[in-house]
Amino acid sequence: MLSVRESCLTVSVGVCVAIAMSGPPLLAENPFAVDVPTAPDGVQRAVVEADSYDFSPHHLVVRAGRPVELTFKSLTWLVPHNVIIDDPRSGLAIREAIPAGESVMVRFTPMVPGTFAIYCDKKLPLFKSHRDKGMEGVLEVR
Ligand SMILES: [Cu+2]
Image (cartoon, rainbow, N blue to C red):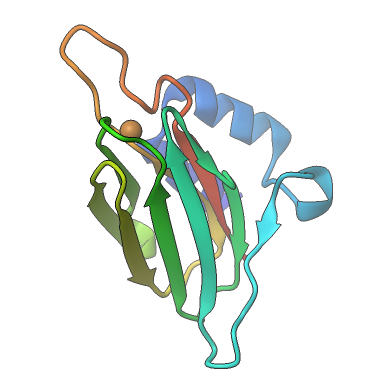
């Protein structure tokens, strides 16, 4: 549960409470969770579609200590997005722009098990952020 509490530092209070109440999500309890396969070269690879306003798949399960390579593919024509996984205490500090219609690859090796938010913080003045509109997913490191 320690890692869940740590990840709460970067998520909103409402989401934090929801995660704390339900405990770390388990694959069996999350039919939409995707167990990212490990390729013969040892890299865990997946493609994530970024649309307005969600990531699909939005729940990825990876193993700690193995490299991860995620390709974020924008399905939009106009709306720019980004991808943020921000938990410096776990060594995760990812922030990459996803220009409209383009694909962006993100590489990292998670070392600390836990549940971390994947989100887009783009927003227009006076509007809700993309994250608030639902553009948020889960990186589950086991
Ligand atoms: Cu966005």
